[in-house]
Image (cartoon, rainbow, N blue to C red; front, side, top):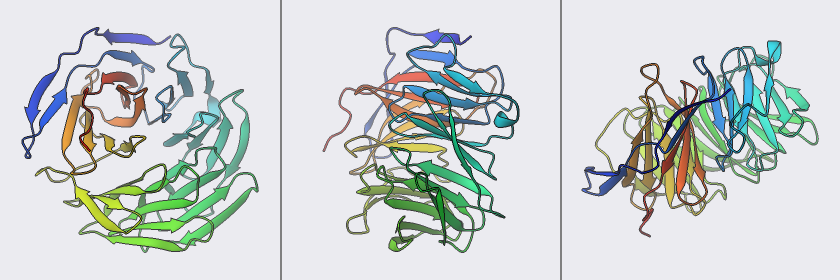
Length: 328
């Protein structure tokens, strides 16, 4: 049974300042639910924040925010062993699980196993699924990337990078892939042919990439100092994150529906909301500590005025967005 850790009816909002002197919204979580008594190996929130897929080494359970008493269903036994990567399609019809050697696709309704794929000799570092679940993007330690066409049961593999791919992101329609690698390159490419559209060079290895749902903008983060928003129609820089801090890490990120904001989750329980137009930090929250240091594993927007997060302690939390979310 789920544990309710905290429920706060009023937000305690504070004002702090970043290097731009922009007032930064913060506050305590409105809701915190514990979905596991074990340390979480992977977690994925649906884009609308309604579902949370949680792997803890013993089970992989799908939780519905509207039914918090118990999970909708769970994978157990060998199906749940060594799971390190998870994802949910935007239409909330499908979910992915991976042990980094193979990837398995299930239906949300009925928990039906749809298919399983692997590319021999390749270790999966990251994966993403299209909005309707028809295409899956895999990024490998070898620098290769694969596109799985679920309906045709076809796997196309491309030599995309010289070194390991650390992060991948797929447009909602599954037509554009974005990959970031230790070769210091992020590439935007067509999933149908593997043809490159844009290539972005960085000062060090690219650890995190994100493409917007409509493939109009993107974000890249390297290991040291490059943290850039890109206009994908031109391949030019839109803005940089407005911060003097170095050595950023993002475990997950998500653009808002209008592409004006980027929500990020990091180690040390930190959640941040950035404005795309100028890279300014406009909100920051600190996740509840239940077992000591934990990481934010997944982030999502809920309705128009909230965000939700999931951390490595198995904690699902809900936060209020600032009333003036963006100044365009």
